[in-house]
Length: 313
Image (cartoon, rainbow, N blue to C red; front, top):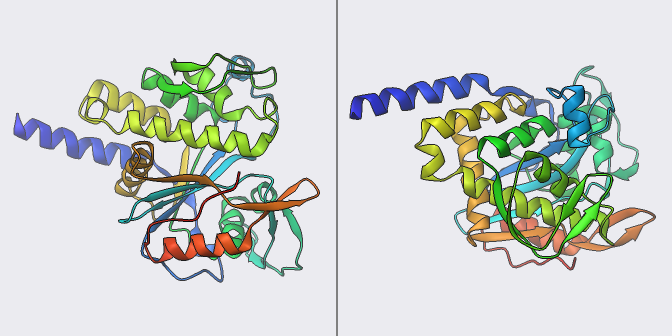
């Protein structure tokens, strides 16, 4: 039995590790901050329709837009002092710095141009997004993980749904959301509607990021359990559902990916902090970060200190 367990575990590791799409070259990111004491992940949910049939797109209400954009972004800091999950609203007001094109290799000089954060990804993909986040926060990103609509919905369905407590019911025709308050189990279609809804809330972007954090932590909490990890009839379908559309950096190992999930699970279990990036106001439709709070937050993460900074929204 012990021998079978060892062989199965090793085989699973190499099978899953071989399916990881290591497509993001953080080596192309220039002028990087110094490494800190914690391991930091930039977790991105994209609106990629890759892997979705026309019927899937209609059922999941994803639309038919070509290409992909960032639908959600958050920093996860895995620290010995406690884990911290920080949502980065896609409407955040940021400066595009000097960067090297991920495909052309050409240097594009920064001009002080300010845009919404999700424009960085649209302009030159993950590498420019990482460069922009690092430039505007001063925090070094160690790993990058991105998943599209199909992978997200498939993981939830492979787990048999994700249980979550919805404090207040809401509806949204665009995302297909129609939820009553209370504890309930969401399938892949419902989960996608839950994390994508923004028009049902007054502070659309900020309210949505809170729902995204809450759901991802619950998802990680359910995925990183003995009932899933030690059960091949649940583990293989779950890994298979997510790895096909999961895009990570070139140095991301399966161990790093597992650490990321367990860190998110820790936040869900109360061992850490979840928050929005502190906001001080707005510039037009862009959300302006609170510079002093961001500086303190980054310093605490870099030094592996307990995070005491709070978000006002």
